[in-house]
Amino acid sequence: QRGLSFNVIHRYAVVDKYLSDLARQYSNVQVASGGKSVEGRDIKYLRISSNNFQSSNKPVVVIQSLLHAREWVTLPVTLYAIHKLVIDVTEQDLVRDIDWVIIPIANPDGYEFTHTRTRMWRKNRRTGMGLCIGVDLNRNFDFAWGTASSNQACSDTFHGPRAFSEPETQMTRDIINRYRSRIGLFIDVHSFGSLILYGYGNRQLPPHSNTLQQVAVEMAKRIDAVKWPANRNYRVGNIAQVLYQASGGCSDFAQARIGNKLSYTYELPAHRNLNNMNGFLVDPAFIRQAGYETWEGIKFAARYVVKNRNLYF
Ligand code: 0X9
Ligand code: ZN
Image (tube, rainbow, N blue to C red):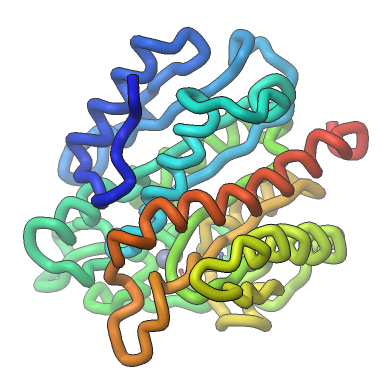
């Protein structure tokens, strides 16, 4: 198994087959379906564990990408993590001390639609709301739902008819709830903006926001140290303070459920100095780089969890 190449952004079917192949070839990898999307695609995720995942008591790190369909560069970040945890394992402690849940394509219908029809599609592909299609999955989680989002189906930030109305958000919710007591770190990967954000999207700060801030600052340092092609200048902070108010966010729901542990929304950098180019487009030369440099940050937070596990578990 040589893994997937890092010179293109792979389609759903390619990733789907890859996950199944890994589970067949590596005894520490399980593939599962979290359920079906609106259009009936399986939402697959991996569990990586050196012992039996279910009966293990190691901390769990969850990484998710492509909740927003057009944010293509987020996919190689999770694929790179899988590569370093399964195929090219150079840092054994990461698989010895941690169990991993990785959801590469959280919004498969929207993602395929960006390949076949509309490159800048963001939402899922929910129909039945009149002329407009799609719910913004990152406004559909049950945290302050409906307070800083749109009730208009045509809006790109439409929160849906109710919290967790969508199978895609139910899937992530169920994973969070199932492993809640063991999740030490939850990362929802988005693009773009070079940001590491923590809760909450309504300006309220979690009680351990100092820890969230300090760990994120260290993650950003690790990423910035890679310097390709220049320092990334990652910024860190509360979502509402650094970016804007937003309700129903995935990482906010995760944060509320996992208590004093770590939950972040990552906004990856645009692929290069874009100036007036569109930041969602991906330069092939940046694909591997995005995976590599983001992994530097994730590793820091994952090891922080292991080091401090007595505080959490
Ligand atoms: O607006 C969003 O959903 C995210 N930015 S993006 O450009 N990828 O759309 C940021 C969401 C962070 N908010 C919460 N987690 N509440
Ligand atoms: Zn996004």
